[in-house]
Amino acid sequence: MAFGYLKDPHLAEDAAQEVFLRAYGALARLRSPESFGAWILQIARNYSSRETLRSGRRSKVEEILPGKPGDVEDRAAGEEDLRAACVLELVERLPEPARHTVLLKYRQGLSCREIAEMEGVPVGTVTSRLSRALLQLREAARRAGLR
Picture (cartoon, rainbow, N blue to C red):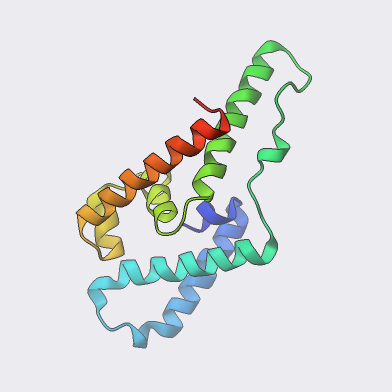
């Protein structure tokens, strides 16, 4: 979760440690133990989101420029990297909780049922969030000229 926001494995490790410390300190306030997964994910989401905003961290789309010097294979790989970075940028622009759901599904590889259990919501809520998010991503990709 933290890596999805922070885009740096070291910062994500630090964030995970901080989240577990905060969760441990607040464990007495957890009302229903069966919602622990959703509860700790919310702490992680809030912490990572604040850290991202605080540091001004953005995706690295600007760093990956097409047409860099190099052979044809390097250029093709660069264009593929640029496309992937653009898609990640579009995902980052999704509103919450759609962005969170997309990251759990496609970055963490969780099923809709697993996401629903973690979030403490019905599976239908997760699938409708994903459907709406994918429609938004397709439209944003079309506007950005991605196919």
